Length: 625
Ligand SMILES: Cc1ncc(COP(=O)(O)O)c(C=O)c1O
Image (cartoon, rainbow, N blue to C red; front, side, top):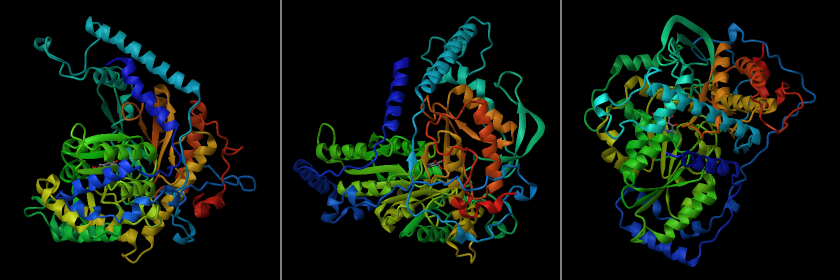
């Protein structure tokens, strides 16, 4: 693949992101489109899908405009002048209950913090030009060295370690992808020590990592037998702190394990539907305020196996460009035509919807059998929140269906943790297919599909993961039930809502402090996923190693998971992070940011980067040592 071919989509994507649209212009359909919409509707009358129930939208809803949608943006105001500096001293032992939820409680109770009802601002600050130039230069240099080392390997000077065609296959078409292999061999291998690090404790707010070393420049690793104890975990998706091993909290899980055992040894369709699965599904439906739900043992399979059951050949999927791989795989397996719209860009989506409705299928121009818009609640690489009200307005206007993946948003946003529908205060029945996973906020495994009863009943019989995959393990189901009841308050405590609010508070605090320090961070102010832009490959590696030296576990991400010039560290906040832990992380971030020159932001938030307005974060000061 030529370099231009590799770089041009990336450059395009950067331009797209940095030239982000801010509003949905009100547009009326022209006559041709109205006729085409009718044709599309008539075509859809013939469909035999449970989603059909939802299609009979009242004609008046077509006129819904973005202007009528609720105002989304709310700015953060941080008054810094009159307030004392917070103490950024190190973490105290009593702040950490090892391998579990931190043991300090809000003494003012959960009512002190305010979960935002309206989504806040989203920022995508552009890096200075020199950063982009240095990043390309950095990649250019390692690529040149890569070619040089490949030459040395070809002439036998350097040892070949990676998979390659055998000697007798040398005249075959190459079995391994050329560019990916080059990248892995020459770039990724140099920095591989920053990923796949073995963890030997519960992934709570603090965790233990196994120390390992490499004697051959990261081709292989050797465990030293030593452990890095009590590193602060800033990378796990433990949003509400339910990844915990407190025996009191887990006693119902232990009881259900004794009752049902661990494995089900059958599929849901055969002998794998236990009473605990039915209880869980009713609970999920009532939590999400929808008619019905179905649960699955694996979140990835919920997307990849259910999308093909919903849409197929002759259908059209409009997919956000930053959708998760499981959604992309499901879309590809479905056989439907896939068109990709720019991330969270309503103009791009509306243009595609309009074109799809007006022109129908290519060549035949028959109406699409079905149009499915696929989006996520929170995007895990950008920290952005879906523009749900606008998407719902568009889907109603063009009579398309909406598939919403709430893997990162369920439990994590909304005043009572019910995800983006609650965050935007939209009716959950406006989303045709609600999907989510239990692997993040619930500290468990698996996922769900929820919505109308017809849809769920249809999937019970048609989804490959319902028919052919083993049912969810009972202790896992019980862990989800316990966490969900806790969030809903139906266990008689306020612990769940306290955690939801604590997460919102931690998120706002952490994001605001990083911005003050001068880091470029992406995403929505409500998003507990916090990407910090590092850009240059050398800085990414140095940052991850420096942070680990300081006993802070972080996740760094680069190409191909991000555009080549937008490598980043991704922090995931948790309700179980105490204020002292966050302060310790922030203090080290400040130092590492200065040492490695990572503070690229040109926006000035505060003249004094360490100043905090404790009143802005309500009960925050209670955690400070
Ligand atoms: C948006 C999204 N959907 C689906 C999944 C897959 O979920 P799981 O990891 O529970 O299999 C993920 C995983 O991170 C995700 O981010």
